Image 1: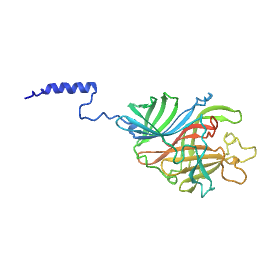
Image 2: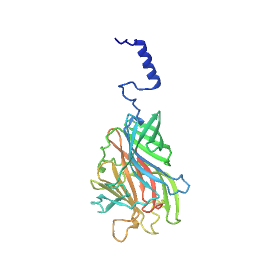
Image 3: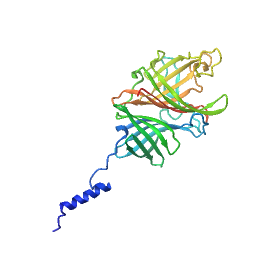
Image 4: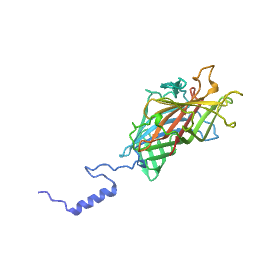
Length: 328
């Protein structure tokens, strides 16, 4: 008959397991605290040359959803644009019918049916720090903040692969939840952007950063249809650098489209109306193309967007940028 192990011996064994971190047979793995306690994040991330420096041409932007599981694994579904590659504009299904009846465009690679890339890896959280190591060996470091109940924010502090600017907003609402355009609160959504651009006049590359926003409170915004908002806003500030392509005496105004095909993806496009040809109200030239992802909090409220600009139809031309516009 086998001898029964004394209770004291079992207590010693349990103590060794606890001190060494070895999981007991039949027990679950330790739960990793999700960043800010949130399961998924809408994220914009990229490499932008520091302000005042010349871009190298290797810059990029990425728009993504990050999904954090309690076992310490993370998945990223994303769209990617490299400045060293040209991306012809893509036409989306929604139009501005009901306003000027024009086609609406987005950056090539963001249209319906375009490839969604994926990364998988592991993450750890320590206080307000988030560290991610992707399976390809690249790493990211973020700070985590919880500015209010129902939403958390991550801000990029470094990476091993060149990404140097990034912002994400997380919640526990299902990622299938989105807000129709007509239900978005008509208010100002402030934010920041960082960009690389090509100066047509000088032929030089340059970079910069600054504050900006999307102002849905302007009375010029009209609901064209269920899937499109549009506005034509005249530039009244004589010191504004917008629409410098307009000739002296031409009216300076910007036509905006905010479109949807359902879901979290939004399509933001704008251009200077002085560039329209003849009597046409529709523009097929080098408009600003800005893929967006909606930011939604735990209660399902719309809080703004994270996005990128990928206006470069030719490599190392146009603009590539990251931005975020929210009321958080």
